[in-house]
Amino acid sequence: MIYSHERKLCLSGWLKKHHEAEYNTPLKLQKFLFLYEAFSKVSGETPDFSHLRGYKNGPVFSNVWGDYNKERIEFNLAASQTYERGKNNINSVRAKKCAFIVCTMTEKELSDLTHQMNLWKSKEKRIMNGEYQVDLYESDFNSDDEKMIRLLDSMYPETLIDNSAIVNLDKNYFVFQKNEISKLTEEHFDILLALTEQEDLHNPVYVDIDDEGRLLID
Image (cartoon, rainbow, N blue to C red; front, side):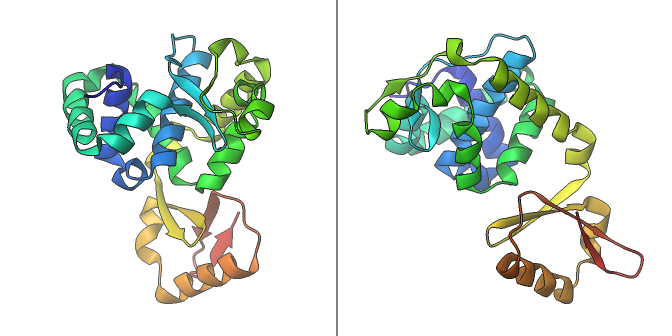
C-alpha cells in the first residue's frame, strides 16, 4: 500500500520522466521534493510540508521515503500514473529549476544546502544526537530561509536551464551551453578530469568554449 500524497507522487513522476538518474537517487529525489515545496512557499502558494522529518542528511518526507524504499515497484507505477493524470498541476518552470539544482550538486552539497535552513537547523541538536523521526514544521521556515530560496531562484533563471547541458565527471558538474556541447573533444575531457583532481571546484562549474577551442572556467 502506498501512503504518499498525490502531490508528491505527481512530482516524483515528473522527476522520473525527465531526470531518471536523479529519481533513482533517494536523497536527490527528496531534495527535489523539498525544494519544490520551499519554492512554492516563497511564491505565495500553499506548500505541502506534511510528513516532513529531520534526518542527518536534511529534511525528508517520511511517507515518500517509506514507499520508495519498501514498495519501490508500486511507488514507481503510482508516480508515473499520477504524473500522467495530473501533469498540468505541476509548475514546470519551478520543477525544472529544482531539478537543475539537484542535477548540478553532489549529495553532500545538497545536504549542506538544506542544513543551512532554519527549518532543519531549529531541530539540529535533536537530529544529530540520534533522535528518530523528528518532525519539522513549516512555522520554522523563517525569513532567512526565504532569502536563501529567493537567492536560488535568482541564480537559476529558466533561460539558463533551457540552454544548458550538464557534464558530470567524478564529483563535479560542468555546465555548458547546449550549442557548444558538440565541440567537446577528448582533450577537453582530459582537461576537465585533471581539474577535478587538482582544483577545489564548487558546483555547478560553468564552462565556455572560446573561438580557439579553449575552455573558459567561470
